[in-house]
Image 1 (tube, rainbow, N blue to C red):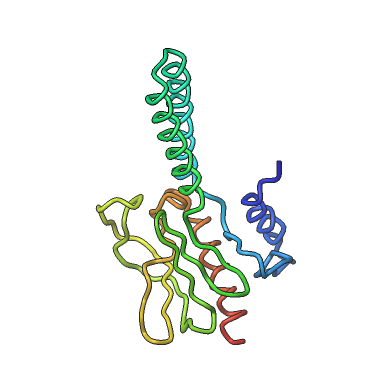
Image 2: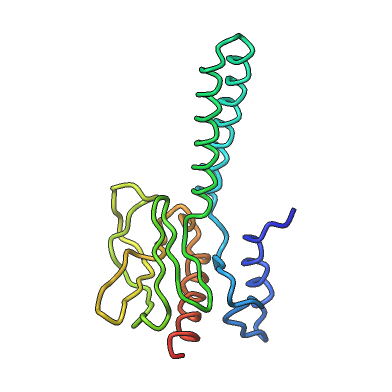
Length: 186
């Protein structure tokens, strides 16, 4: 089974040679891609949710076999909702393509075309730790629109993808800035 989210690091691994200077390592720039791998906190949480879903579905089978079919159907629905939540959690992040930058949240997705961006830059600011209300001093990749509006940070070095992976944050931020430099002037 192909795992497309692994192509980001393979592409960067090829560009890590000093002789290579590939800012946009993908062949098809029309396809939406996340320029980094999902972090261990995000993947671990999704794995735990899928494990929980398997127990819920097993309980649904046991409940249905015991004769309480409505309870079994309720458990199946709950298990499917947990699976959908885990899959959506894996999709959360920043995605780029020739058309713009897309910030995918758990409940909402916001897309900004490159032509409407004024700047994409890394700044020092208080950032949320693992998406919780607690803030710590860190780095964030912010997008400024031409109308002066600033979106929520695209990436932070303390989110579920980059906690304790500062080099990966720098590489992802540089790549998104390169996509902006390539397509914002068109």
